[in-house]
Image (cartoon, rainbow, N blue to C red):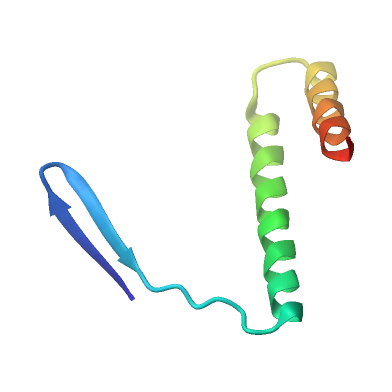
Length: 68
């Protein structure tokens, strides 16, 4: 349940989080978050106004950084 309040132009959001109880569920959550993050990055790169070669170079740089 989220409760949203506004105060002096700021938005205050109270959120109740329910974390996984088992290690397997935590691993599954981490994997799902990683997939969503990767999709967001891919979508962002796809929308860039640059040649395909630059997009590929950017993706290769990201992969290289993740593997180091």
